[in-house]
Image (cartoon, rainbow, N blue to C red):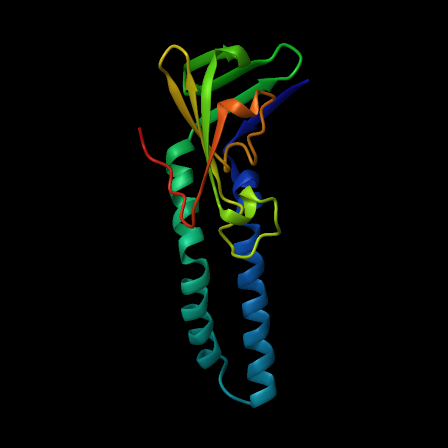
Length: 169
């Protein structure tokens, strides 16, 4: 079976679901508080804006960063043959699992420990695949939600942190 991934509207919604849920809960809270207190909803919307920027701002910036890094890329993994295809536009690179020298994975503390997400940005992660021939590919969670390839754990190095911005090539 071949798994195919690319950055599209649905992959972005999947990645941003925690941000959207927080926004919807905040809007519901504003509406409820304006009815309960007979105050203008504008006051509560301003409070929501400040709280939303503080809590979700880093996740939104990370989302935009990941979109810029993997915009137009696609990723195919054939688990029968063990071949991986990474493409961008008309360029394609095909390699096998044996061609991978190592993978650096960058993720939040909670994701690395396989705990429940605490912040809106906890589920964002990216991996850099280093090949034996010197090529490298940055695969963000917008492209592949969780890059778990069947390779030796000795070849995978996990880096934990609060903000995981992917670098542009």
